[in-house]
Length: 410
Image (cartoon, rainbow, N blue to C red; front, top):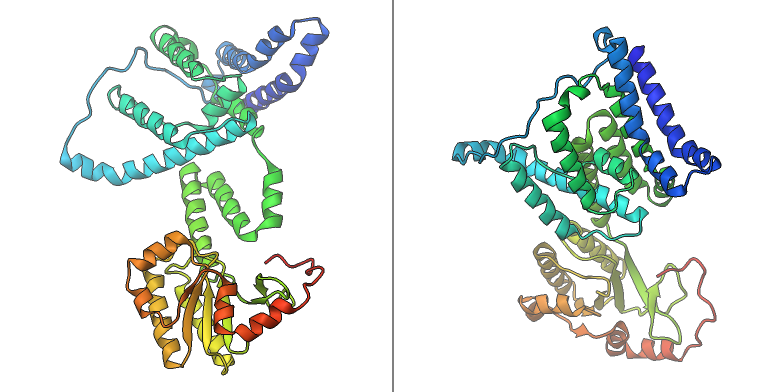
């Protein structure tokens, strides 16, 4: 009960300091700058006050958890051991710590930078973390990262530049040398209250609601991260969120949006036949893939093309519109080779249109273009003009629709 009382009192005091102390001081004609400083010194007052209460009432002996004895002095300079067996044993854990540390650090940095409309250079952040960890290695320190709780408390106190960390380090060194006995009775509940009050200001429930409305899959990754962080820890939560995000990405992109397109009358534009009134050719099948082609979606494209050709016995040409394809990996290239052969056996020619320059450069480095039974067209309109000029001429001459359906987005 004593611990609960200390935690509640410290938390309530800190909330009041954040919202009520400055207006109260301004009412008593205290200068705004002084009122600001006194407000930001609230956590110090809470720690000093609770430490005095625990010391005077000897609450540590009654079960209140305190910081206890803090070793005095500065850590010695020392070099880590360079042993192959030790490196092999520590490498997996070290790699995980490095990854989690960087993810946590950059996440906190971006969150805090967004509140001040600042920009974070992730590469520079990584260099800083690396330098800090090298310094920690020779000073008997722990692995270093931008901790969430400490960063928020620092931010909340008004820190704006790296000089705040220099002052913090100098203060810690001074305390470690001269004043460690004063922290013996510092209750851990007061430290927890300081962190809780600072972190609560960063909780954004609006983002959670927005994500739920916009994307259920993204919300599931967010929810999994939140739950695992709360019940297991930050490291496990980040790993769970990253793993689920990758799994959802693979699942989502393994079934890309594939549209059969036709020409919009009176224009050179080609749009989804299910969303627009368009003109199509009975002998040319135009298929647009709205995703890069890689190992996860290559088989899906194969199956979709075979199904569409099987349903249309009059088809003699298939044009793959690649306007949205930014990359084709080796697995997808193999699938395209198979598609060319299978369609050739069925008497159907495969063509490509609107292939982006970097993708075409990669294709030229392979033998695919030599095996391609059709051609590569600069635009879909050029492809249709070549493969079915009669239908294209009819579509070009038709009146342009005044307005497309409101729900049409492709």
